[in-house]
Length: 72
Image (cartoon, rainbow, N blue to C red):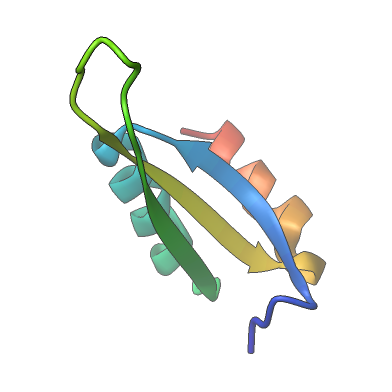
């Protein structure tokens, strides 16, 4: 189980394609993960907001997950 007390942040991205690619690799490897999305508003010039994607794994699996990402 991944809780806030034993998780490590693996990735922060604004690219949905990259997020899905990493998520698929973690699933294929059998790694448990959690993610959070957050809407990040644009500048004061009126640009649209975008989503921030954060992926977390159990801290004991962080090195393994990082190794998997290097292979992408």
